[in-house]
Length: 472
Image (cartoon, rainbow, N blue to C red; front, side):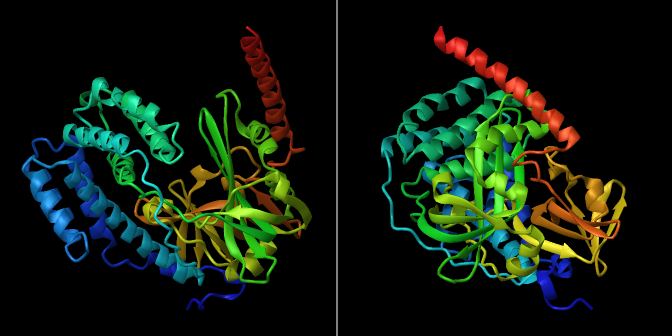
């Protein structure tokens, strides 16, 4: 028998295996709609009409019922206008939001953690309505054509819209989304030649963009300023060929003595594809002092630092000061269980958005068919080893040999998985910690040092070339 929320905030992994009522059905409806989008909605076939009817049925008991029922009927007849497509996007988003909330509730029960309520923001300015109307028209054309029918002429029509939106701060979020979305589509044109279509991803991006054409849809509460002590316990590194982002997860202890909160702080940089491994920290490190503190296992005192409603610190080195040592595993055992989670903005509610900090110990690590699992009281939890960055000393082998783990609980391919951020192991009767972000502030590790040196040479050469180009 597994005790309720055992000491130290250890997670109840047994609850992660219980079926979630209605989840599979909701995701099946979304999948059917996404497949219908692939072929386009200009001349829907019977299977597409059935998918639209199922989407309407899934929200029949919600305030969206009448709008979506009409939209599904019009779309099945091939006569849906932009308003009807907006209703379909809203229904799809609502279903994924409900799936997110159900999964988030499971995590809350498993960890015993509460979440702060969402603050409804004041209605913001709507932006340039003529531009938003034009964007919605382009997205409607895309939906009617479908991914398999798109071509370069259709996709390139978005470029003028992006250029018109970028100068306006109120429209920049949609502009960046549309620019990235169109870039992916352009790289895949013509759609008829595609062997595999990322139906979920493209439908996600399409739905998000359609909803953001509604004036005020992306309005968020104003950030508040906070003062107190920050206790970092893990660094999540995202690296692509031309960009990198480090996200520090921490517990924030307010100076006023109120309940600690889960917060994040992120830094993103452009990256040449020749900078690999530990060298990426050289690009990130100068932008945020918190990385060095996290790598060295130190707390940080912040004063009047802006904090968004979703728990993201808008980092400024001028408002931060490195403090005393703070062991991340002590934070995970003692403070993490009492921390209040940040709410999720309505448009961000999606199963892929789940990344809940958790702490595990007393497990047995097993590997079978290439899958590493941590078994706690007979309840296995798969480890997502692909998310462990090479820019740090943490490895799948270290996770397999560990006795305690700090990680992010995610949802992937129909199951909860664990992304390790740090592990503890016993080596020669000593407890040793390994952290994915241990090299964030610098490293004396042999392999890490080589990568840093190579990155230094690469960055120096690129800066020299850039300087020559500017002088010309």
